[in-house]
Length: 176
Image (cartoon, rainbow, N blue to C red):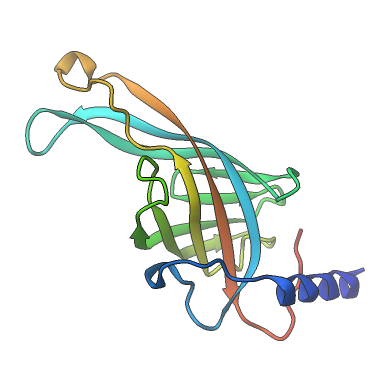
């Protein structure tokens, strides 16, 4: 069974094509694309006092479900930013670069490097993550202008595709 999974992962990797992105969002050389997942969820914002005075929407965290390209549930995405697979493994990222979304009303596209991976599953060996094809998720345009708004929370729908990379090796063992 393990040999079959290695063969399938090798074939998937050989067929996987890196997405066409601005140079700043390209995964580092020596890393190979191993997984692409669709996210469907919300970007959460809090109305908070602004350092410049007044009040503004402040990003809190994402909250999304992750599916493979056939719609099969694969995990969740939440604060950290963290991606957790159904096998219990996770990766926490740190933003390296950003670029505007294709739709100017959407959250930016990102390249993140892995700060740490936990567990022994499909997310534990991830080295880089790209957030691409974003739709929605921008801070609300509704009022956040007074002290009475401070308790307000906005959950703004968004979708994106996350591309996961790991260090290239002769054989990539599929963990999913």
